[in-house]
Image (tube, rainbow over all chains, first blue to last red; front, top):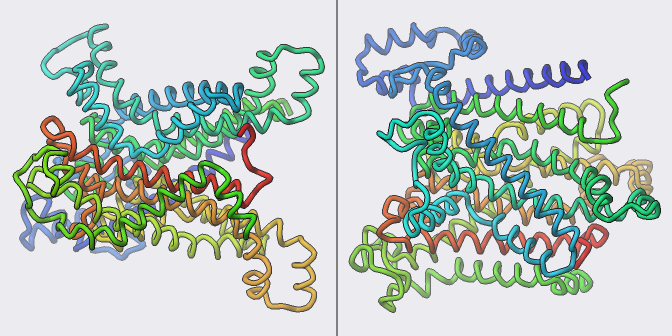
Length: 323
Length: 279
């Protein structure tokens, strides 16, 4: 178990380093001389200032040395400086990270629970009206662009029915504390989390259904039935547990898409997370910030993949850790 | 081939998907000729509600531009980007997967590490960064979408080639001294195509969603109208004019749904063994 974890962490670190290197070259691809761009972002572009910037950020040094300085910076969590926001990129991201984690993890939990629930219902009642209804809904949700779902949610629940707030993290100026504050945040969280969760819910529903139908045909299920176990027990203990494996794998594969969806969701709902930060950086062409967010997103995906790998090993009845 | 069409047209998802796709293609090809209203020109007063004037059936946006015209012209961009970026992704992914599966060993290791690396990077975030850096245009959009969507192709093709390689007819071709490229191109790939076709139809759908998301964030080609751009432009006035965001979104939904259904239909028709139970 331990050697497995170290091996995976090591692999993750190597991939992350490669992403950082890729990031370095992406910055160099950005239009214009970085120093001039930075000077422009800072609002002053006279020659002396540009030269100072070049020296300060080592842009007058040869490329390999620059790369070394950059990688060293990222390792010590120095992701550069955002001139637009007048703050270090790492600090800006650090402030926004908790909101994104709250949103993505809530959305993930919702989608996984509902997806597995609906998927197993559909599989249990395969061929009936319930199955068809669930399958059709899953197909439709699967085809809806996240930004449009978000806007339709606002149109329905904020504009028409006035049930839920349409933007932000908390009610501005309400100055709530304690439980009142938590309820306020939860109210703001419902729509973004549901929006982000809906697409993945559809995916997990389809996957769970397909996978359960696959497992149902296997011999050990026949054995269980021959032993006289009840249908509910077979479904839960034998079929679902084995059918969940591909769902867990899918969850790992989808972590990148989840982050991408968060960028859109946070943009529409003005949710103060790193996705919204990425959108702001995009609008202002703040490349340092943009690429900083990109590195952190990649790191988050790697960590998430590592966790799903571990969960996979824990869920899979065939893998024993004792050895 | 006859068998293929029979099972494709025999499943409801295949038929519905085909009808939707044919409609979308027809709109993209002939729509702009039949409805020559330019999507950029002001044709009526701003915020004209839908279903009030026959000439502007779906109303106008904040600048008095025809929403219906935008949807028709937008079909071109969505389908074109979806199709071309998928083709580019296939052109990148198939050779990498084929070489990895055919040569095995170190070549396989190196190519698969490379593929996994690309698969780990959050794709939408990478697409945003690439389009922002290369400047938004139809070329940068197609390039970025292709660049983030080829890894599944490579992995799928590798798996197929890996199993086909051990077949006797391939072994026979090797023994008779055929060149590697001849064996890969003429003997192996034609037999590995059907799962690739299924994947490709789903990739076109994903590419359309990606393009619309990029355009929604303001990263669309500034010279071409697209559905995502229209939704993005209507977003700020959603309280006054719901129709500007609702209709283009429905267009995206229907096209993506159609392509996904075709994917399912193709899957049932081409891989009968894997076809789903309970239908």
